[in-house]
Image (tube, rainbow, N blue to C red; front, side, top):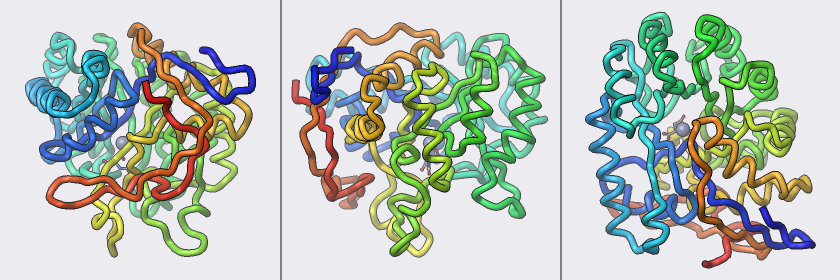
Length: 359
Ligand code: NCD
Ligand code: ZN
């Protein structure tokens, strides 16, 4: 990493996004170039309708993503570096053979556990982890990581307590049963989750989103309810935000970049029953840079964004670089999306301190 002497410019190894939602069909025309502008590898979440449950479906989805890339006006260099990695959606009916096929494919990088009903398009998710023991055993054998949406879904558990309850009741026993299983706690939102990850072996890591570093529930709820801050797991209180910033900027390789950029059309967010998800792909690096710089830790951005993810996944680090400059940028109010709709990004219309330097 090469920061300028007064930290107003920083060149880092090209980052990867270890948790992103690109959606499918015409949505890819917007989401793919936004992601490919900043990131080489992507962990593409499988919660499509219907979900990506088999290796064949994952291969087909990857082809549609690559087609959208070819149709975009992204530079040839960026096109060549772009490498979406696919994920299978775990269900009660996933079989050990599905894991063996996934490993053989070289295209499927991981398997995602959504507790049924936990978030957007999770109705087909796992109803009881006991149904998946043989599959998880095969994943441990094959070295395929389990990516976890860590929230319980019981109606009697308060939405702000769902992450901690999941760690105590589901993940902790699972890790004891499968100590060699690689696990990523996706989009962690609480100090409890950060401490949990720190207490585990190197097989357990976590992604952290820009919104959970920059915001807390006051931003979403004080002075009027702000649907563009609504995502799952939901923003928590400020003390949790503070711990997430500490661990993300600590240099611990257990915490790495995963935007959870999750597009929903503006009208579906600004709605009496608004969808969960923040859209950040196009501005994710300036968002993370602002969060790291705000605590004087811009020098820790490269590890978080570009080194620790590949290390966990056993992949080489990227060869290209990207430069960020401390020049204010205005986040667009919206982007065009398919069917004449728009998407409103996180911090739409506001200023960020950092911007990506044009190459
Ligand atoms: C995601 C989505 O819209 O697909 N939404 C979100 O609030 N994060 C699903 C998810 O990652 O939980
Ligand atoms: Zn997600």
